[in-house]
Each structure stands twice: as structure tokens, then as C-alpha cells.
Length: 382
Ligand SMILES: C[S@@+](CC[C@H](N)C(=O)[O-])C[C@H]1O[C@@H](n2cnc3c(N)ncnc32)[C@H](O)[C@@H]1O
Image (cartoon, rainbow, N blue to C red):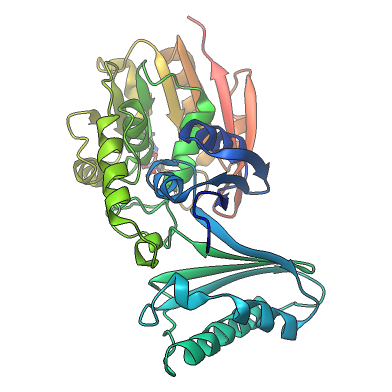
């Protein structure tokens, strides 16, 4: 990072269960030496790749660039290692900073303490190099995010090129109860194997996340095209010209899509939020949404005769009065209205999923926030 921006060690973080999908995305984007890790994928690339990764990787939460990997035995050594890095070459003293520390270590039990010592060392380094000045800490919206990972004695110090998590695409303002994380939505669509040519249906679309992510994929648009803030913009080596070039070239990659992307929901209020989000994503001509209860899908002429459908039904009593009854209705609707489809149901309700009386082809374990969830695939033959 400091001397050679052509060969950066990069770690891209993701949600559990999406590592393989992310690794595939990274390879397609030109990442080198791609390796799956736990909730992450490591690779190598240059500075331009870091910009591209932030714009394009649909299943990435954040893109970290490694500054240093070393061993430490105690707090003193941590301080010394951090102090030794030329932070003043990486960013200016007036930039605000935040430290994210994750610690799996017998010696260092307290991640807050590790973050504090890291911050002290950076402040001391700047005081020495910048006439007594030091960067301010801003834990909510910092200009610069520094990531510390301690696994027993193994210390990794990285710069977070993304800043806020990359699921914050900047198209979704209006959210309803239980909206799905955008990164998870993109991951579910990738795992469904949708070919991005045939029709895509979300029968319980809520705020429209799956529909919007599907549209970005269908038209080959970068999911973070609307996002303004990336921490790499605040680095000293930020190459405005290169970033603008990558951004413009990214938009040129837009393809045509001749299928349909359609959503339904029984709740009118939720649908109005979906429509607003779809407009914010500039996808109002690409996505259709209709008010419909899934028990009435037989009357829905707009429902395509075949395609891929992903259901994300309510999964607990807070969201639906009778979860088991609802899943029973889903089961009937699948048999009656989704013949010829590849259908997927994503849910955290094991009891609900048992009410779907169809043989599952695939059951993929995932997490939805802190809830154990499953993406279950069914082929509904004609
Ligand atoms: C977990 S939310 C979906 C969240 C969505 N994936 C998002 O990102 O916002 C479940 C949705 O199912 C809808 N729903 C519940 N019962 C329904 C039914 N019988 N027919 C159609 N939609 C229904 C709810 O209104 C709610 O919006």
C-alpha cells in the first residue's frame, strides 16, 4: 500500500454463506490469488481494483487493504507496530478517524482497549510528524476507517476503503419491517442461479430490495452506482481521474434485458415504499409491482408463466399473526401458480418451512442478521 499500489493485499468481507459467490465475483472483476476465508475472501489487486470492487461487488460488505501483517505479544508491541507505520503518508491530519477492532486472543481480551491503543499510537505519530496536531476521532462518519484484526498473536492492520458498509447502496430510504440487507438480497439471487435473462418474481416484495438488486444484475449495472461516499476518496493517494474513468466505464457496461422483473405484496402501504425505492434506483421502467395477496395469484394475469421466484415471507409472529398458516398458503400457491418455475423460499422459520409440502432440491444455510435462516429451492414441474 505504501510503496506499491499495484500489488495490494485485499480482504473483502461478506456475510456467512456468501463466500463462494463473492469469490466468483472477485475473479470475474479481475482479482488475483482469490481465496475464500471465513466471512471474507482475500485477493490481490491494484488501486483501480479497489475502486472497482467498491462499485461492483454485489456481495461485499467492505473492502480492506492490508498495511501490515505481523506478530505481537503484548500491548506495548501493538502500540509500537502501529506507531511505526507512516500514517501521515496515508491521510492528512485534518481527516477524522475511527478504529474497528476484532480480537480473538488470549492476551488481548478487550477489543475496545485494542482500538484505544491503536488510536493513541496514530495520534502520537501525527503529533510528532504534524507539528503537534492529531486527527480527531469520529465513530459515526469518519473520513478514514482503520481495521485491526488480532487472531491470537497475529496482528493485521488494514485501511478500510469502503467506510460505511457497502450494503448501504443509497437507493433505499423508505424501509419497512424486516427489509432484507441488500448484500444478502444480491447473494440470494446469485445462489438461486437465476440466468438474468428469464423473468424474475418476488411474490412478497416488501420494500423491493430483491427486485432492485435483480434489476442491477439484469442490466449489468454496478450496485453502488448511487453511493457517494467511499473512504478511499479521503486517502492521500486518491486518484480522482482513475476513479472517474472506472465509474464512466462501469456505466458503459450496461446491457439490455428482455425479461420481466415483477413484485407483489398484499400490503398497500409497503408497496408505496417499494415504489419510492424503485424510483430512487431509477428502475421504475424496469420493475413492475402490484398489490396482491398470494392466495389470489391465480387471478394475476401479470404473473409470468415461468421464471425464477424468490419468496421472503414473514418469519415470526411479530410480522405475521399466523406464520404456519401463511407458509401453508405459500405451499398451495407454489403448486397452483408457480408451475414451471425455479422457486426459492428464504426464511428464518424452521416451523414455517416444514409447512411447505414439496420436495426441496436444495437447502442452503445462511444468516439473516443474527437469525439462522435457510434458502430452500424447489423445482415446480408443469
Ligand atoms: C419479510 S417481508 C419482505 C421483505 C423484503 N424482502 C424487503 O427487502 O423489504 C415479508 C412481506 O410479505 C408480505 N406479505 C405477508 N403476507 C402476505 C400475503 N399473504 N401475500 C402477499 N404478501 C404478503 C408483507 O406485507 C411483507 O412486506
